[in-house]
Image (cartoon, rainbow, N blue to C red; front, side):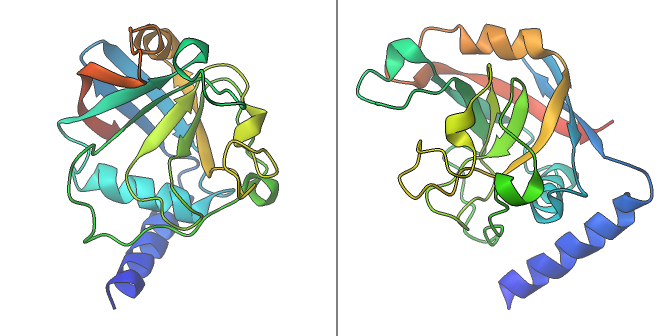
Length: 190
């Protein structure tokens, strides 16, 4: 029942915003603001899921907590460059995961400044998201960063504040997880 209620809410949110073009959001961090445009026509379920968290204030006081780059993934044969954030260590089991929208269906590739959903397996994404630094084709469907080859669900692009993303990406993170997380004060619609 909960999953169906979430899907109904997601569909309603998508319909409500479809008349106004692509939604835009501001990710307000302690290091500066990051702005993003969300591609709701291409990735409707993923955008609706993300906006559910935004519109309900569920990203307030969350954080960027993970930085992945060449120097801290020595044991990975397929390297990527991203910053990851969301409701780190928060309970999210009351909100159903979103259906996995593959990049070969949406057409949204993991280029520099793409915002995408983090996941374990297809269909397990909830609130955790990441932003790419540089082009990351290994994160697209068919890419092998995940052994399942399904890629990650990209759903928008950074339109402002990429310098903030790069500053966060440059923070020392020997084991990928930041000792001092970067607060996300809030995410709101622009």
